[in-house]
Amino acid sequence: MERLIVDHPLAAARLTTMRDETTDNAGFRAALSDLTQMLIYEALAAAPRADVQIKTPLVPHTGSRLATPPLLVPVLRAGLGMVEQAHAMVPEARVGFVGIARDEATAQPVPYLESLPEDLSGLPVFVLDPMLATGGSMLHTIELLVARNATDITAVCVVAAPQGVTLLEESGHPCRLVVAAIDEGLDDANYIVPGLGDAGDRQFGPR
Ligand code: PRP
Ligand code: URA
Image (cartoon, rainbow, N blue to C red):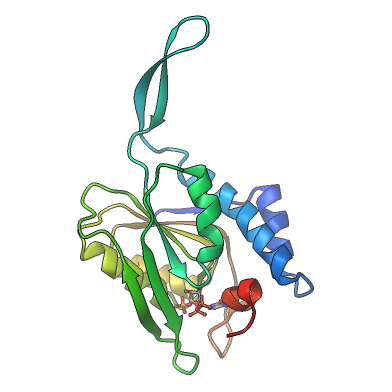
């Protein structure tokens, strides 16, 4: 699986703010939004372009646009904090939604919402979820997308655990990973270490 680790100094600074336990909900959301902009920018660095004929105030000019804007799929709740900024970067993108809550005891994904276009053939898909821990939630989401004929899936995450990366790799699905950091591992409760805690709670408060 292709992995792109976005280790820019500005990305690292926003990630540090997110990791810091003294950062409040508003500060966490702002840092996540800024970091999402950087992740999406890097995720689209090699995206195909289509020519666009325009006129500058001086002469005709051949410019370009994204050939095929990706479908953005935030995974609720935590992915909600990424979608506004990702959509601002790619305003012409369509947006689908998946809702999954991890069972606290088993860490198994419990899906509760699925709102996606029926056929994703030929459409790149960007799944937005800050956390890739065991990988169960992302794998479930990717399976929903593959069942709709998606063949070009990018998981856009803030922090990943090696276990989640391995799960995606071994799934054999057509997926690449764009992430700000791959951390050391998981603790006994399957939280990423050093991580940043519960990304949903840190944006929106505890459930
Ligand atoms: C978090 C996170 C991922 C998932 C990652 O969501 O946003 O979706 O856990 O864990 P996994 O890789 O082990 O599946 P959570 O289930 O806490 O729900 P929330 O976003 O509503 O807080
Ligand atoms: N979900 C989170 O929000 N944080 C983790 O560390 C693991 C799963």
